[in-house]
Amino acid sequence: MIVTNKGQQQSVKFIVDTDRCCGCKRCIRRCMENVWQWDEENHHAYPKYPDECVLCLQCEMDCLNNVIDIYPINTLQVDPLEYSAGLVTLEDTQEGEQA
Image (cartoon, rainbow, N blue to C red; front, side, top):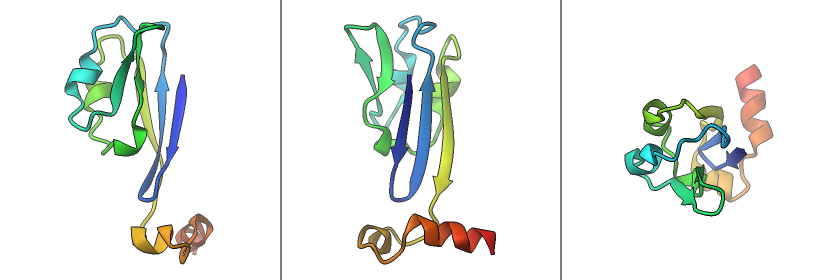
């Protein structure tokens, strides 16, 4: 399962190998931001609220079978209010990084 969150301050990709999840729910208990939830039907954890992730990576480190991989995709170095108002775009920030 791959979940990608494109937020205002950061973009994050969650990769969860659901076939290897042992159901220990350590990721759910360890997450202080309530990102992870249990899928009762499919018997694995998944990032229900990925926009709440603060990249502490505790869920990834505590996973017994190492089934969670979290990758920061892009971190914006702009004011979130300017970004949400449309005054600054993602392309503007990428051009600034290349210069």
